[in-house]
Image 1 (cartoon, one colour):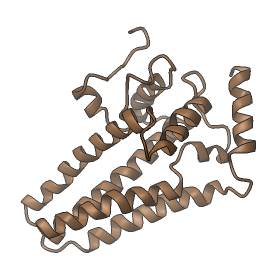
Image 2 (cartoon, helix red, strand yellow; image 1 turned 180 degrees about the vertical axis):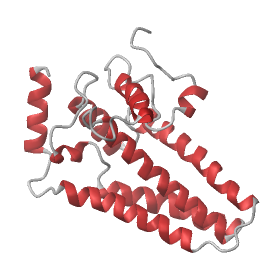
Image 3 (tube, helix red, strand yellow; image 1 turned 60 degrees about the vertical axis):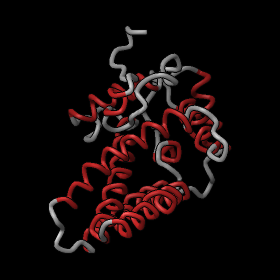
Length: 221
């Protein structure tokens, strides 16, 4: 680890992470509340019709596109009203983790990996629930509940994968074959020379492949 990176990490922990920050509470809130929403929505389903099940793959693709666009633009370019995302991601996360030093060193470092609880609540309340209500009104309750359940499950998938990329490579999660492959793509994204152009999907690189921003080897461009 370079001295400048080490210095930034220490400064971040000292000046940005609140003294009363509880990593375990943060982790439990993210996955506990997310799972609660998913389970609640699934229990509301009743006699789901064949066409209604199409909500799941369509929502998955919608979420993958939202992940791609949000990461490529709001997180890497200052967008009015969303500058907090740019500052937290490009200004902090990419300075804390370089492509040569991807691993967190303590539980408190979860603060720079997981979305803050307030942003999670914002995403759910501003995007998942309103669209779910609209789909319920336009089609049926099953469609709305399936949309919210799938969207929130995708968000949790995002958080799990992103956390796995920044855990030690020899950890249980880090040794999973899919995680190893996707971790490599995300590591390329953390290269300062590549991060503004390549590998914006944190989870499955579907939109990266569609929009020509899929990058697999550091020997290229």
